[in-house]
Image (tube, rainbow, N blue to C red; front, side):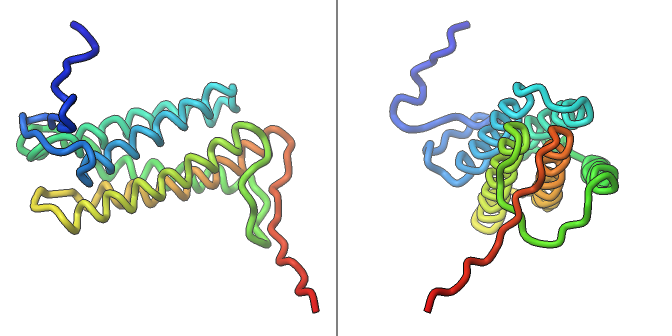
Length: 186
């Protein structure tokens, strides 16, 4: 099978289920941003993070693939493509609680950065927030059913990615970079 099909040369793409829509459709933006998030997590993983982060990334990346497939499918419930479950959200919450228990409490806002893994996880968090915004917009503008669970998962995932970035920095013996309000000049 060839990787190129030429079916998208006119600016249209096919959804699972056969429908064709413009490549700049909000649905494509939503699952394209999920794909971008997944690739960014792959980049974080390529920097050999702590084993705990590596294991979390494997689970998250698979879930993101499921979300992308659901968003790329017309009538995903009918086509058995609505795979993500409440248990996935609970798993994220458990991971947040577990990682946070090892971190010092936050006393100020922190800036993205630190170790390479931490920085990539902060980047992933911002992409996750954009993906969440795209899915919220899609849910508001489409006649297709977008399960609220997808939005909940992405919301919780962005929280986990923040905590994972802090954990990665701590594992690399890098301190959080605290934000300080600049002094006003007179």
